[in-house]
Image 1 (spheres, rainbow, N blue to C red):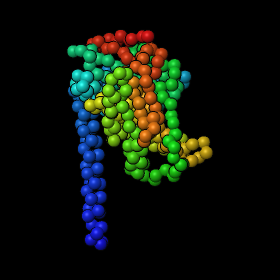
Image 2 (cartoon, helix red, strand yellow):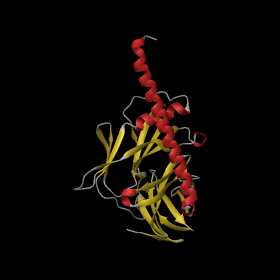
Image 3 (cartoon, rainbow, N blue to C red):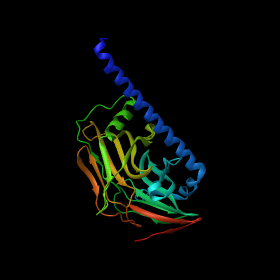
Image 4 (tube, one colour):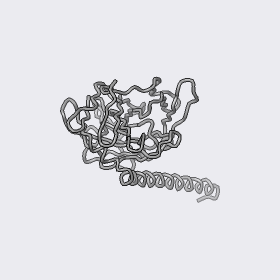
Length: 281
């Protein structure tokens, strides 16, 4: 190799090594925090109380075995929280954040992640039944491509695409607050559970502290013309108005403070001890 290329090549190698180390470190932290949340505050037992199903077909959604993210938010004095997902054929359909609001009180913050009606019940009592879609899928403006042959290459593609997005909170009459993208997806689709249409997919988060404020869902799928395309959808896990950009252009925004309710895509259920008290509109 010519000497003139050695400094540049060494710099590239160092950059790649740094990226790999940072990614591995982030993945390790996510895994560690997830395990701590399950053994520490026992939030999975609270999540297991809910049965969520498709309201049209009555097909039951599957609760992912562990919280996909354990988080904290020092800015809001939230010392511990956990994000759970319910899926159908491995695609996320509903999300719930659990976080304490008192010594034995928890808020359960639900968000629909599907385009069809769903319903959540506890001990046979329906507590949440959104009638409108929780998100809308958008194709990314790229030419159809051949799907990468390996799972690891598709993951690299998804991480690269996720890095093209930025998000910020935009509260009225206050300073905007940038959110941080966790470049390691908190959830990856299981290939053996997917329908023929879906090739791969993942869920990324934009966080404040490590508190998920915006969810970014990404899928590689086969379109009607049999070409492979990328699509994305977004959902908020915050009351604060939010804006999301793809490169320099706004692709999605919610400029009103979030509403929640029994028939809305977002709902908050209060848990006091072992009972529940659902906040209706």
